[in-house]
Length: 214
Image 1 (cartoon, rainbow, N blue to C red):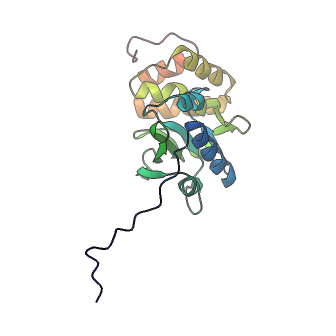
Image 2 (cartoon, rainbow, N blue to C red):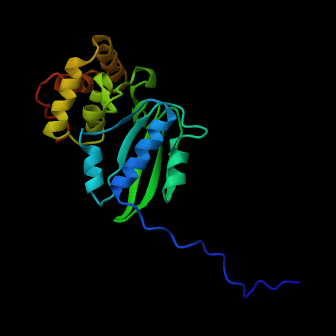
Image 3 (cartoon, helix red, strand yellow):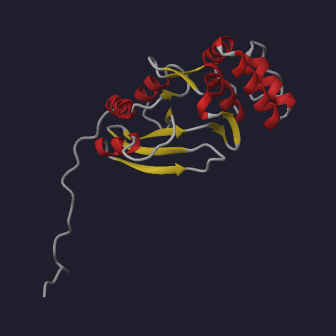
């Protein structure tokens, strides 16, 4: 009979040096590209570079086409990086996303991958089939960009800074008129005419009203 009470524990080999955030960004980008699905960075145009330069808890936000199943980007990232899944929300009535905490040389960093429809809480902004992206820059375009750059932060309680607001207005000006109308109807049905009207007016270039967050 073997006595395991004094056996040394099975310890993993020494972990390799943690990568810097640029390496993490490269791994994430490669994993997303390898799926062959549509995906895009969320937030301001310089958000990925700011995330690389940061050492704080701010997420690297990504939108990915549905579904995240099988040999997907999340699994590929997990094979290449020392990370853990810290959130996995999959209620189709709300924002669906997976959050990964990744070990880096400056501490833990968070990669958050939204998949499917764009929501803020229970408020549907853009259904996934209507989300347009620029495949070269991996940026959201049109009404989806307006939802991400302007409406999402306002519904979370803050007005975006001027560069982000200007980008949202440029996206609104170039958006398909049918997509603009659909977004306005969707917001009106869920938020009421005043809030929807204020958001659409700001997207069109008006100064934010006193009732919107500052």
